[in-house]
Each structure stands twice: as structure tokens, then as C-alpha cells.
Length: 326
Image (cartoon, rainbow, N blue to C red; front, top):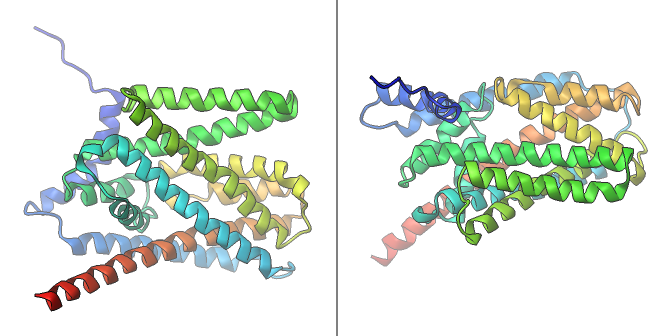
């Protein structure tokens, strides 16, 4: 009698991430109604609204603000938002290539999933993606692996940049370059080997493109953080190294907590406040941490709503034009 096989870690993760979808399908065998996902999105947005409201109540009232730098931070955030969309599109070329999912469909999938990511754990975020792509003929397994690969790219590239930054400080700036290149190469190799896309230069090219977009969003975040800090205290460009250290540590802490608590976790805000206070006044650290939360949360929700609303308007205009032509 052969021994019973034990599930691998990847299989257990996929089973956990597919749990909400299985439970919903058990309740709605004929198909998951669209209104149910709308309820989840409204609940998630409500939780995000409560979190931002209480964060704003803690904002220090005695700090001086320069609004021009907030405008710069918001503009840079829009660029970062687009970089994440292009990174996900590159990943879909690896895992969904045969289904020929368009850039527009991938953007719509990200925007829709962003509205449920404020529920506890990343399970609902991936479940919403799976529901979206299932209607377009993409297997749930592919969506889960692609989403976990996205998380691995963000965490892996952030950790590589942080180690490179530490190497530049403790050893030499020249040592950071080969260390970063080796770290990125190992990251792509590991993902291509274990997640998929290891065969053929085309898929490896898409891995590289995805890595460029996701890793590039970290330096963009550093400049966003610098702009926010500059709105409160007279920081210089020379402070970018300290701010980069703070941003990378806070971002990695936030990703660690998001696996269990989702956006409800306040790991980024706590880490930012503590680390900023080592270099600047505590009030500036509190104000900067709160403003980061407001820009990231409200920016993501507003941008996603604009994207989804734009698609709805475009579909209605297209339907009217077809109706008029007939």
C-alpha cells in the first residue's frame, strides 16, 4: 500500500486563497452574482474610510505645511500606480499568454481587486482577481500563482534594494551595484524556475520587464516619501539615503503584515513614525506617516474608481454607437 501523499506548501497556499471562492460558489451554485462582489467592495471601502478618518484625527495640528510638495507626491503616486499596472500586465504575459488578455482587461482587474484589498488578509484580493479572470477563461491556479509571484517580486526587489543600500553604506557604493544585480538575477531565476516561465527567452523577458516595473516603484516611493517629508521639514536631497532606508523597511514590514491583516494593519505607519523620529521631530514623523497612509489609501481607491468608471462609460458609449449603427 503506497503512503498517502502530503500537500505541498504551494498547494496549501492555493487551497487557502481559494477558500472564499469555494465558499461563495457553495452558496451560489449557478454562479457568483455581481452584486455580491459589489457588497464586498463597499465593505472594504468603508473599512478604508474609517481607517483614514481616525488617522486624520491624529494628524498634528501644529506642523507647518507646504502644499506644493503634496501635489508633487500625488503626481508621483499616479506614476507609481501605473507602474504596478504595467508590472501585472507583464506577469499575465507569462501565465495567461494563451488567453490573450488585453492591457485594458488587466487594468480593470487590478482596479476592481484594489477595492477589496482592504478586507483582512490578501485572500479576498486574489479571490476577486480569480473571479474576474475565470469569466475570461483563465484557470484559478494561474491567477493565484501570478498573484503570489507579484508579491514575491515586490518583496524580493525591496529586500534586494535594502541590502544593496546597506552594502553601499558599510562597504562601498560600488559594492551595491553587483550585489543588486546578482540579487535581481537570483530573484528572476528562482521565480522562473519555481513559479513558471523558465522555458524560452520570451518569458524570461517578461519576467525582467515585470521586475523593472515593480522594483522601480520602490525608488518612486522614496521620492514620494521625500516630497511628503519636505512638506513638513526642510529636508535636502542628501537625506534621500536615510529616507530610502526608512521607506524600504516600512514597506517590507507592511507587506509582512498584509499577509494576515491586510490594509487594516498599521505596520507601515508605526515603522515610519519610529524611524523618522530618529532623524527629525516626532511631530513631523507622525504627520508624514499619516499623510503616507492617506495618499496611498485614498489614491488607490480614487484611481481605481476612476478607472472602473471610465470602463463603464466607454462600454455604454460603445453600446450606443452599435445600437445607432444598427
